[in-house]
Length: 395
Image (cartoon, rainbow, N blue to C red; front, side, top):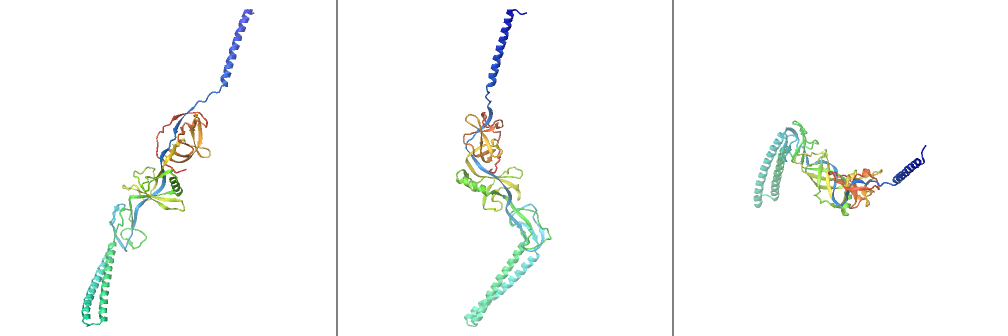
């Protein structure tokens, strides 16, 4: 049985424990009731500044030769020889085919004989005309006889001219029996062989010659895009490229860039009614015959410069549920703000913004996956890992 002193000591100990427990519970209650401040999320940002950006467009096109000529016979006959090497380079005037010329040589000889006879007749008529003038002066012949001799002399001269024309025709036909290259360039395969009878005016050509250096690239662009660029140039938003000095590059079918730049020759004055496209033509050097007619290519053309363009890295652009572009901007209080934007095109992995941002805005490029609108952020400067030229059509 505890004494009175022991009971008092135990009571004091229990009272102290209760007081300590109550204080601890009160401190825990106060601690759990106070809300914690959320940590600011570190994000990479870029500051939007106006810059000059070229207006680049990638347009589909095909390679065409600068000159093309079908080799055709100009006289009828049998092909007796093919002189050229198929696929080789020929010069204008080089011999390509030979037609059997035996009949043409006979025709030339006959024309020469007819000319000689006509010249002899004309010589005789001139002599008679000279005598007629003497006799007319002596009143030996009548006026009618004199006029007849003068007319005979004129007919003889006309026969000589006709015979000379016939001889020239025979000589030309003989020359045409040797078929020559009308232009210089690369000649393809022979479409006829020795022993083939060819006729003047045949539908089928004997061969095809194409000039490949320089070479053309014909490409198309929507007329609406051309008009948009013209309106932007009039409004001062775009500086037009100098005609004839537009920067034109060529992308091959495998996506590689052709090593030699070209120049824009012209833009067609009419629009294709079926497609709404305008045809443009560029000229490219082709010394190694790397570009061949019929190849599909893409033309990268610089059609002006946007002088006060606002651009952000393409990775900063997001899409809402409707597919419209938007991005995060850091507000004055370092809170993320989600803004809808209007983009035009992409240049060097930079999206050009038409509406939605202003110069000096801090756009979040990296780390926006961890935030939402209104989140506190800690902005740090973002450095691009690398850039590449990937122009696209307006969207």
